[in-house]
Structure formats: structure tokens, C-alpha cells
Amino acid sequence: MNKEWSEMNKIMQKQLTRTSFTDGINTLLQLREILMQEVMSWKDELDEKDYCAIPFINANGYHSKTIAYSIWHISRIEDIVVHTLIKNNRQVFFEGNYQKRMNSPIITTGNELVKEQISEFSKCLNLDVLYEYITAVKTSTDEWLRSIDYTELKRKFGDEDKRRIRELNVVSSDEKAVWLIDYWCNKDVKGLIQMPLSRHWIMHVEAGIRIKNKIKNKIKWIPIGRDIT
Image (cartoon, rainbow, N blue to C red):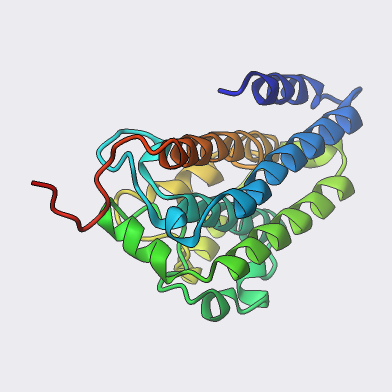
């Protein structure tokens, strides 16, 4: 893990106490902005085809995806967790008609997709609108973070919250995805701030950097759909 990001994440977690709560939120907001700047920098470094490449297709880990998928996945999970689970209001995704505008074949987190499915999904996405979406989600989350106080951290969730998520069909029933609902609802708000609102970003942004570096360094890899003999 990036040392700077890891250290900021550790500091933030220690600061989320009654006496230093505001400092903790400020550290979190700074970390999220640094991570967002990294994601935005890819627009100047990558070609459209790079967002669909899977140079680590057979690897185990977050880097076995595409960069477009990573951006989508960060955004969808945060949108679902903050708006449907925590705030119980309308997701940015639906409010902004992002499925149609982004040309996405799915509304889920994407956990159910594997290998070539991830590449094909990535090819469908309008990248400009994808970047608009992650920006809108982050902005909305940051506004919420600035509005809460320490007492909010201890709020927990239950069966009714799980039901609301299921009814929206934003998490696939596939075994690779459905576990997310229990995972989120077994945490309190503090736990959700730690994952996915901070550490989840770090892991997927780092995966995106690894994919980007592999592509741009032109290290040998086999593109999807090409038979090398």
C-alpha cells in the first residue's frame, strides 16, 4: 500500500474519537481528495482502449480488473452505502440517470463480473460520464461527511436496511456479490467510513495505478480476444 495513503488512513482511524473527530474527518477528506486527483490524472495519461485492458487477467487481486471497472466499482459501492444504506435517500446514480447516460448494461457493483466480462462491460461505458459520476458521488459523500457529528459513528444497521438494498437490485444475487449486503450491514457508520469510504478507494486506486503502469511500460501482456501463437 502507498505509504503516504496508508499513513493518512491510519491517522484518520485514530482520530475518529470524541475528542479529535473533526480532525479525523478533515484527514479523511484530504485523503479522498488526493486519491481523486490520482484518478483524474489518468484522463491525461490513458487512451480510451487502456480503460478496457486487463493485463493481469489471471491474477488474484484488485488489479485483475480494468481501470474503467475500478472507477465504476468505487463509485457504485460508495453511492449504495452512503445513500441507500446510511442516508436512506435516492442514489446519485438514479438521480442523475447515469445508467442511460453512461451506457451501462448493469446497475450493480460489478462484483459478479469476471475476466472477459469485465473488459466487455468496460467497453460499453461512456468514460466522460463515468468520470462525471465518480465526481458527483465523491462530492455528495464529502458533503455528508462534513455534516455529521461523533454520535453518528455508532449507528448500526439491520434487516430492514438489508431489505432496502435488495429491493433496488443494486447488488447481484451472484455468490461473488451478494455477501456485500451482510458485510455492510454488519458494520456501524464508523466501520463504513473505514471501508469502503477510505480503504476501498486506496486499494482500487492502487490497482488502477498498477494496471496503468503495466500498459504504459509496454510490458508484454495478451490483449483480450487475441490468440498469440
